[in-house]
Length: 136
Image (cartoon, rainbow, N blue to C red):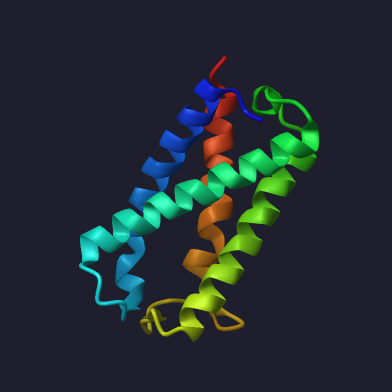
């Protein structure tokens, strides 16, 4: 596992990045959840953070090294992107089918999934990894 300090730093970075993402991209959605907008965006950002922490834990287990974030391999970068994409696909398919949200006409889609949410976890996960790699 990632050491506790690095784990909390990754979580903080991921949370900030996902708050920025959620607030800047919310206009691409029609929210049908009836949850107040800002509360919903903060909850979504916290869940995104937990997903990224889960991805980092999976890669830690794969590496059997708690400090893999200090010197990630190309495969580690690939794993963060791949797992982020897989998580995003499942989240979008489930929530679109449950009617929790829809996309506005401004949301570009790929096979019915919005491009913005499709790349969010992969991109914020990679950026979190780049930031944490710089911390010794």
